[in-house]
Amino acid sequence: MKGFILVILAIIAAVLVVGGAVAYEVMNEAGVGIDDADSNIIGKLLDKVRNVESSGSSNSNSNSGGSVVDTVNDIVKEEVKFNAQNGEGYYREVTYKDGGFRQYDTETGELIGSSYDSDQDKLPSLE
Image 1: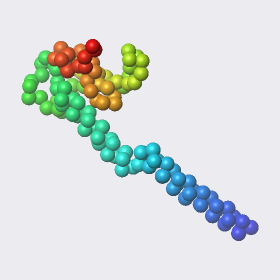
Image 2: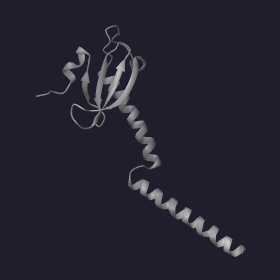
Image 3: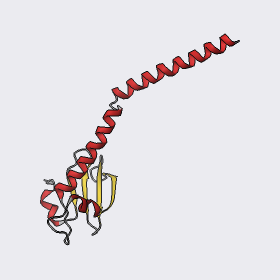
Image 4: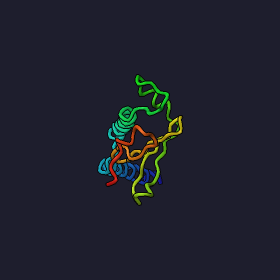
């Protein structure tokens, strides 16, 4: 009886080891490796900061020497929404303290919409 239990435990251990190895390979093939996930998160955060920094704060009461931290503190809400106007894809909408908003394409990070007059020349042409 002891031998039978040991064989069952050995089979379970082998299945777990093989299953773990297969899962690790599948995750690497799908691009979900642990190292990739960490660098991807950092890359997304850096892109977000660059987007805020490049578009700058368009608040009428902001000074021209405002830092990125000041701009980030002006953000009230940030959410990803379905692009119903285009019928596909998603965009990120950032709402600021003054009630204004900016919309960014989630794939490219490009500014695609804004309530600020100073951003209108940065928007893509509709022609």
